[in-house]
Image (cartoon, rainbow, N blue to C red):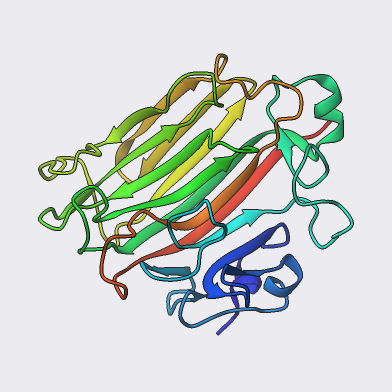
Length: 277
């Protein structure tokens, strides 16, 4: 069986896992390690159908003291294996929005971004508090301190179909978090969404930014695309010093469930691009 990096272009991704790095936080698999045929049968491996399997338990080590949830999630690293470039900052490891100052666009690795993924969510948590159960984040844009988008899949225990929704978190002082429903609802007791997505059902998402416009598209075979656009003009990300990076995989949305409860997804496509000056 080929390793994930032999089937997918992981040349600009690192991986956060729920394992202990030795100091009580989560172990990171570097770009070099992930591309040296890394896989882990517990969290990150090639499935029998050739897809890339992410599996994330409720219990595990977190990336920082500020984070309450585990993750098995890729973090975009545009520097690749050139570790002389810092991870954070407006530099060649990260990108900025096209609405950012020209100097930042020149300093960054690129501007504006598009990430396309095809996946199936195979399992969600079935234990935990009513606000946590069954929810997981499957893709993000992360800024310095905030998340321009967190894309969620959620299936409640009594439903056969799941919902898709996302959060847009402006910078501090630029307004409160916005929630946008795409398929079904994020409600803790929602009935089965009529047009929902079942476990093991393949679907695609596209997260795209052009200047201050964020567009999210959910696509499924034989069904019309579901598209939601957010105007980020007043969200504060076009200021100097704000940088962005994509995240993909699983960011657990449940820390109240049983320790061995888990979420699992299989990715069949993961591609991204940026505009360069």
